[in-house]
Length: 269
Image (tube, rainbow, N blue to C red):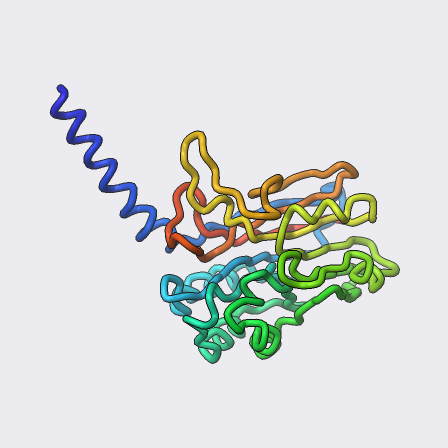
């Protein structure tokens, strides 16, 4: 009896690290959500990616699976909520990254904001150029209004990174005038509370990695991702916040209980 228990414990201790370092980080789980007034027709399909953090542990080849899943969804809009690089000084591979990101297709447009890692290791010199070359518009305390085929207007705005950038909610919202639905992008989720009371319908964030490794009775939380860690939240004025757990890893290149995520939003308004 005790021998079987001992063998079982040994197997668990061996299998968990293998799973955490070799299997779960290679997954890409698609989460789909219906948001807004569901009695209204579906107007827009928005797909969110976050925290790719290309590195020796997350090479550009790993994006092939993500590209297939993204394009299978046929999104109207693709948004990227920051941290393209993990440590640019050690691993950059710009031409390959541009080629991979270019392959992601959206019928209306592709948008991105800055993450804290996009400022570090020299990445600040190239981040916007890389994203622009891959047909992403980088929103830095800015936004634009999109007019849909049925005449409805959607505002999409992006906040500069809140750790290493110079974020301004006021400046971002100054681009917003008439709109039927408002989407705001920010890298760090806890700053989303700054949009409460501004008649913003949806805030999309990343940064947290969902804790990356979830252990019983203990959860790793990043700076500015301590209150909002993963998934969907409803804030005080019914503003929705979604925190994407990201695709890549940082520091410890493992995931446990928090698989890489692609989030897809069917918006009704």
